[in-house]
Every structure is written in C-alpha cells, then in structure tokens.
Length: 222
Image (tube, rainbow, N blue to C red; front, side):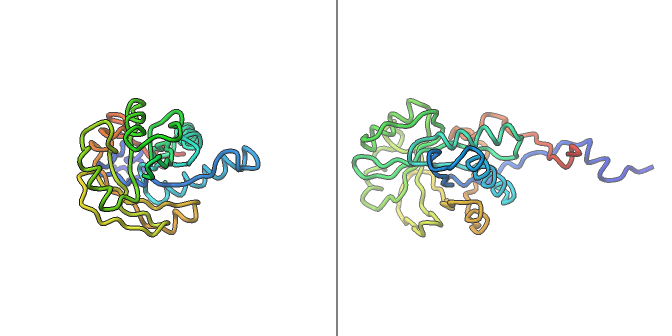
C-alpha cells in the first residue's frame, strides 16, 4: 500500500536553500522606552513572526544605543526555535559624520570614533560593518581602504523606509534594507537582499552548516 504524502513527509528532513533572504535594518526602540518587559517581548516577537512569515532567513535588529535589543531578539528566536537567524546590530554615527550599522556585537561601540577607528574596533570584536548614506565622495575614500581593518565590510545602497538610493561605484558588497520600524512596516515592504549561504557564513551571520538541515514544525506534528 502506498503511504499518504503526509506520512512520508514526516519521515523526511527539509533541506535549507542555499540562497538566503536578508534584511539587515529592522529598528526596535531602546529597551528603556518600553513601559514593561511584556510589551517589549511582545514587540520583539511580532517582528520576528512577521519576518518568518515574509520568508526572511537573516534579519539585523539595529538600535542607536547598542546591540541589547538585538540580543534579546536573537535569544528569543533561538528559545522558540524560530526559522530565522537574528543578527544584533548598532546604528552608529562616527565623528566624521559617516553612518554605520555594526553587527555581531555583544556590547556597544563607544561614541566619538572616526570611521576608521570604529571599523577597527568592530573588527577586533569580530563585528561586521555596513556603511549607509555613502555619497560619491565618501565612496572614493572608502574604496582606497578595501581589505584593510579600517574599512567597512559592505554598504547599504537602498533603504525603503528612508526612501534613499545611493548610486555609487564602490567595491563592497551591497545590501538593500526595509528600515522597518514595526511588524506592520515589515509586512508592507517587499524588500530584502539575496545572499549566498557561503557569503553569509564568511560575513559572520551564520555559523558553518547552521540551518542546513531544517525540519519545519508542521512536519514535526507541532
């Protein structure tokens, strides 16, 4: 007798795709701005849920004060076995007026650093730096630093919430982001960057083999 498709499916393991959807700019307020812990956790969970529904694989949670809220989101996604990788990030304005998103941090980068010093500090902490709002003049400066510890690792060329697009000739990986401020924002923006799994591993967003074999909850009977 031929088994029903669902019985067969429950015995199988779904393989993760090799091309991933990444949105590295989702904003959540400072922890201090939430009235209580439950409100904060509900906000974080709603954004994580929307990201999963949208089909995102990697999201960056950024905040001006540091990676604290991103770490909470990361821990929640792991604890609840969500099918998404959260990268904690910090939005940073350098003393020479360059905007940066700095990821994979455990603690904030101190204020008042130049672009070069901020990048060096982040790289010492195994962080990943993405520059944003890079004009043609700044692009020329950054291009000269390619491959050095004082250079960012990527640039954001489009942010849907800000409505800005930077058409620059630059030798860095390029990302587009939603800039979503809420779960509702995220659901309304069909913006993400396609990234190869091997590149995501090299950038420090994924551990080697992380999520390669993934069994969805519906196949576990959950």
